[in-house]
Length: 205
Image (cartoon, rainbow, N blue to C red; front, side):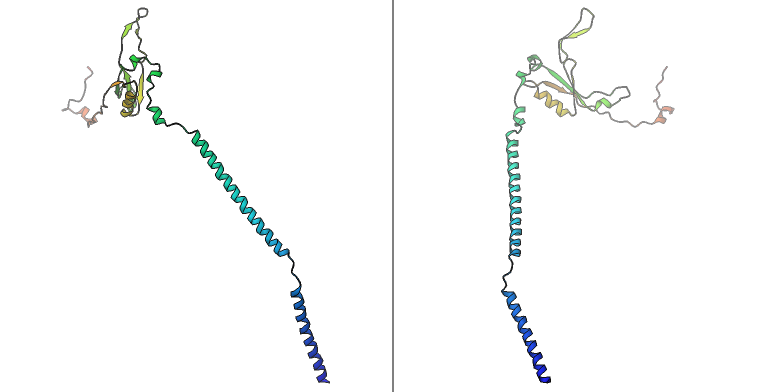
């Protein structure tokens, strides 16, 4: 009896394994759904579309930069060096007597006795020569027909003033340059004003 029951159990176990194997085979033979494949293809297509859009945008940016570069080249400023070399004295309307025969003086103003002191001695000045003057018969004032008589130009350096004088006029204005006079400092002592053996005091009598 025990042998019969054992054989029955063995048959059931064998049948269970066989059923499991058959089920596995049947499951493996069932065709898989195409949802995963289509989803992967869709994602791949979207990625390619995104890359194409990025490339198109980059090409559009490059084309816009080229257009801007062409526009800037077409509307560029002319060469100023060539323009500055042109002689336009005949177009300024200035009489020739003020172009060919004028002489200027380039100098540094001396210090004054006011509170400004050396404030006005840091720039170079240019003034023109004095032309004919006459006394006005009506009021007795001094009159002149020179439009440049009261004109004083200011420059930062002596070289700028000289270059301006050479540039004006057909042959440039003739000019005289007065070099800057730098005072030499002297050692002074306040106590020397009260010394009995030094003649430093100035009498007001």
